[in-house]
Length: 488
Ligand code: ZN
Image 1 (cartoon, rainbow, N blue to C red):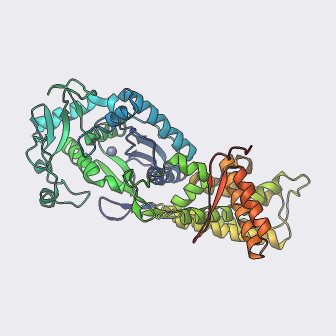
Image 2: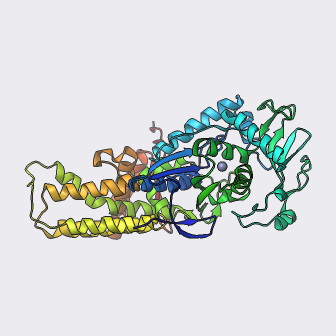
Image 3: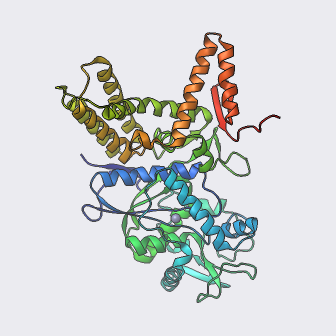
């Protein structure tokens, strides 16, 4: 079976052939650490994590590099995001960086994302970025104006190859910032002169300044992965201008293909609209994890193909919660039975064929461009067959139960990260969510038989624990907060 991936560069599915047999070199654009990460980040980094996990599970040795952007990523206003964070919190820029880098790592750990092997920081690689800019200047791919250096997109015929945007379109659409002294609007900054009030600044051959956002990824990716590496991951939202500029300047520097495969995750919307601070619909990963187990959030992300957009809503998360619970039913039963004393070692059941089929279907799905929804479907088929076998009898012995548990743990746990290692490791949040869901269902049943005393009792008892139920047209949702203060 060969792995086939959709390459955003060629815009088609291709067989995956690594540069070196058995080894994969992969880069993913990391976060700009000036605020807590939101669930859009969860979507992208869980998608990339499952790609990494599947490739390693397939036997590849993989080096995973993900940068930390701590300088040079400017807002539309021209303000550096890190400096905005520093002003907001009245601290040093590097305090903002440390604060939110740790917050980001906490979130990624909580989501069970595999830590990258190298997490280089842009501010720690300024000499490499200056060297790259110097070479681009020497080659005639860049020009300097008043202490800033810009990439001349007309010097590089392949500019636009990744995003499919043409320079002519760009000229029409480009916003012309008055303070920029670049020759054409579509040229982009490699190095920016620091204005007197700009705190984050480094000496350079062009005076004091700071690197542009795109050059950091080129410098760090090539430093740790080589001039030409296998996979460049990230989010589709950054394909232009960030990835396009990154690729153009890298290929102008080396004359060879920068990344062979571009695997880009689709974006995330909230109730059908783009998530943004100004709309007030931004949900942090920490908020989401207070209400749903990491496994449920991963299950939600993986219920769509990584390259597709996904819409988050209470209803969608509720469906993910229920789907995940359904998947977990036989896992919990099997693990509980394995704890029981006096379990027969052998049973004479032939369940190996079902397990082999589940493994093959799972593998085929993941080898088809990391099709996680199809891989989950393979696990649901295993769940259906396991439930049927447990219900029918004769009852399985230790060998069969252990083989079922091992397969769920390997594929659902090791590759997708949606099944915890053991029932005990389910996590408090997961247990709480499961219990609340159970009570919501019991309350619905009470209401259905018109036992309103019982249904009110469930709602009021939960409220004293700080859990508020809200009845809406799509069913009942819940919010966890502080228990109400005791009434005098
Ligand atoms: Zn990047």
